[in-house]
Length: 115
Image (cartoon, rainbow, N blue to C red; front, side, top):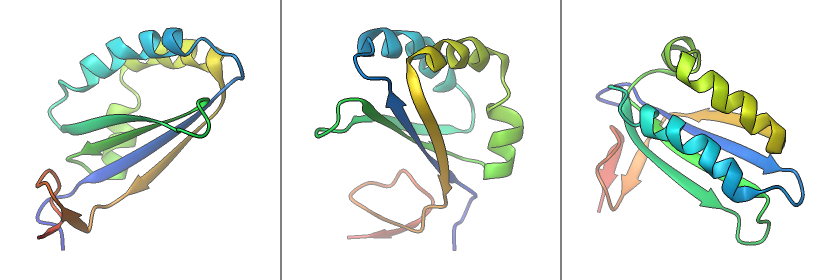
């Protein structure tokens, strides 16, 4: 179905109540700046839950398989310091992996495009 292999990662973060949200983002910004220069990186979007400000979701698209991302991207040294510091702000972190299969409005995935 896909012309090239892509992985969509949805990373859900639950912040501790009354966490310094700006400090959480300030800690991760250098990671995202570096990550966005990776050759397999396509796109990343940060979402804040409008009903629960302590829930943050990152949506990322990568031109690689889940297995390749876990082996090559998740283990990069530049991630380790920000990951360790982010843990101070978090109750939990959950990663989910998806394969794009359909898309409307843009053409940033390898999925089938619909009008």
